[in-house]
Length: 374
Image 1 (spheres, rainbow, N blue to C red):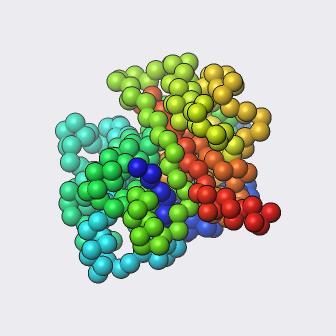
Image 2 (image 1 turned 180 degrees about the horizontal axis):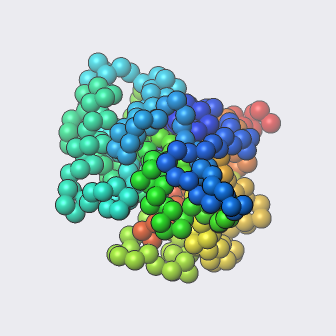
Image 3 (image 1 turned 90 degrees about the vertical axis):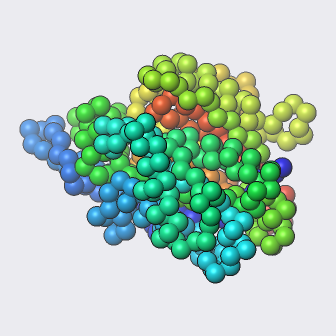
């Protein structure tokens, strides 16, 4: 069964909507600003605040799960406005809709709680409060919370495919949110020497964002006359590593395998031409993972002709929101004729050692429109 992308929503440091954020990222615009909560050596005998990408005037004053709810709700509001979804009073529509919330990997030192001791914490403090805030008549068993970090979007697509194929639901909204700009997260990054600072040029720049994607069965989308912005062609999700993160060579081989499995097969007439969206964040280990994968993919992809997009350059490290944000960028490129080809591949590299790849394709109707315009 073909899964379609029929709606997008986003809030980021670049704007309170997917259209503005998409345009700014495509234009290479950045809006970094000093963050409260951590002071570092400026390299000249003084001190300076860490630079990051907060969503100013939107998520300030919210912390951890509260910030996730705020950011996810903002992206949902953008989705509703852009896609003209029916109001909450349309019970039949919403009873056929599922909600998957994406959260970071829960590190006890960063969040001060453990899913081993509180397995229902994400549902109780993130997913269900979000659904109540949005006032959606969605049944409890139609709500999920995944703590998979960067690879959450791929896991959500796998879950959505199962639910849609079984016809238990007609559509699923995937909402991802994360924030690294709170004091606990900044200290956690600093203690692990992961931050980019004036005295450390390789490291990550903290950010925060919320992004959501409406996934729908093709039958449901066509029945209600929805605009199909993209088709999910393939999804590869590596097995999560147990315990310590594997070395970059091992992760690079796993990522290359995920990408190869997601590419069109030799029996397909189409080839892969378009964009690669990577969640590289300035850290050495992630760059090494992609470097090893790139070597192994040389005979499968014409990397010299593909456009590589690094959302982190404009958004900073956005963790669990990076997967849905990449899908928003890819499908937004299909819809607005900004993508260089008819394909996009979103690659994710998780702190846990898990890797994922999602291949999207521009629908035939939009390809026809592109040809007509040219």
